[in-house]
Length: 337
Image (cartoon, rainbow, N blue to C red):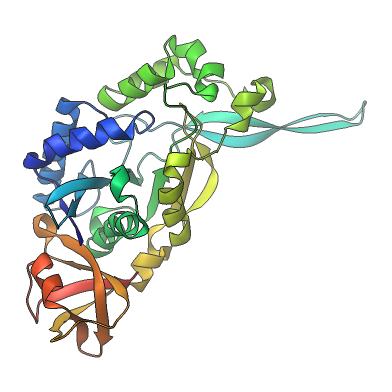
């Protein structure tokens, strides 16, 4: 059985292990002990803060294998990016070049540096231990964030986005970065990726080109990876796309991985989730698998278990109640998985 809960300082060694395993390209989850400790502190502080509207809060959750109490995954939410510095992306658009005299009319794709996502909530850092990258664990961890957003809508914006990891190899080589970013930053992709994760991002604005980048002028290898999802992120991407996220023409400035977005109220888990009372079952449930959450803020918990919807609430097994630290009559939130 798996359980999702807010991160705690005791989880730091497990987060370090997961960050090392995640490798290059996940800039919001760096393999840096001090930065990870800061993320834990920020999450705990955010959960203890009364929020009227989203600000610089961030929330980090861990996935626990309850059979041995080991941390096997993590995920998070930034309430609003761009609060202290613009959040940069490339917007893919077209430039029209025409000559009536020659009867030539060309539409040329170009990359525009922008910060259109500044002021928007972002899903971050979905990382799962390789031994636990099964559909149940991945879905539970990803969708638990959406149940949290549905429970506390005042803490997030009505628009939500996620950056998907772009193409790079295990040695940290990115054909897109090699063709473009390297010329302006004078460093390899691995170093730029790490600096973006652990330092102030003002250096991006200082060094990135201000003018549109015409896509056909890039090497073919760089063009081919624009908007392409890294194979290690395909499973997490599929979960979000099935939720209702869409690609709207934005890519990451480092590896050109796609950014996907959605209106928060249109996402499947958020529109289908229900709240009511926990009811007891005296025998094994014959119902479908559900995501079930309970607990307020710091005590927020989500698990996946078979359950039976009834008029008065959701009937769950005793083991599920124990995992969520509830009993019959407690208010819970659920959605069929």
